[in-house]
Image 1 (cartoon, rainbow, N blue to C red):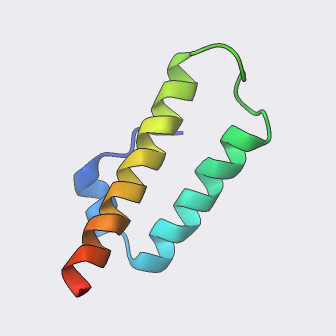
Image 2: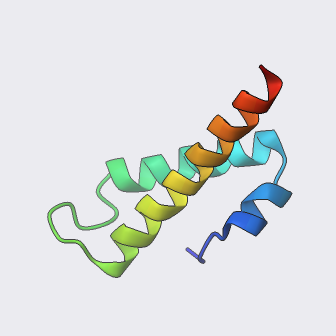
Length: 64
């Protein structure tokens, strides 16, 4: 999986972000990455997930 930068995440539509978040969550949960080792792949997936969640929370705050 390629690096997901915040600028790239902002360009995605809301539906695409949700899909990407679901893919990342499944990759982490299904054990496609080593569970107990903090490898570069694991760290990058966690960072990408955090970026998407942060962006969603920020967008939600603007609507309120």
